Image (cartoon, rainbow, N blue to C red; front, top):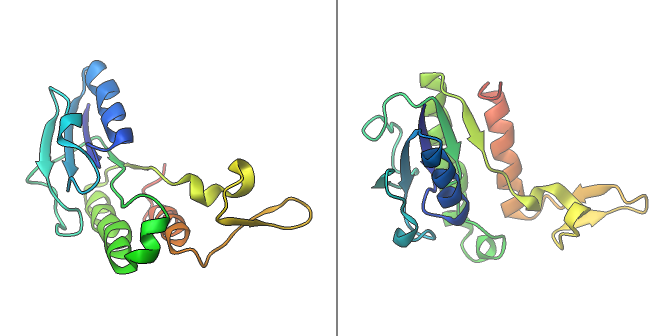
Length: 161
């Protein structure tokens, strides 16, 4: 099978690519290398330095992937406070570019969400709980809102089987 992995030089992307290559798949990674590392590149994977915010078509890198694993994002909540516009552009506009491309190609997309959206299961300091221990996400936190927004966009665009 052919896979496109966004964020392929990050921690999760690197480990996913290792498994895909080990299983004999063709893998292409696009990453802007803003938080990932070149030394994470794996032999057998084709890497392209690409920012998903700047492209609406990824055909130059891989024409018809069987699946897209979307791991590219600006991670961590704290930087989203300092750089809200960059965080929004990367995490929302970039994701929308990729979703639109996947929809046009009818390609399934696997999206890596964030533990920040799962509330008090992990006693996350960015979530709120009521007296019955029901978890509520503090939607004021931009980072969490963006992550929840992606999941909604993916479902809306019909990219979840």
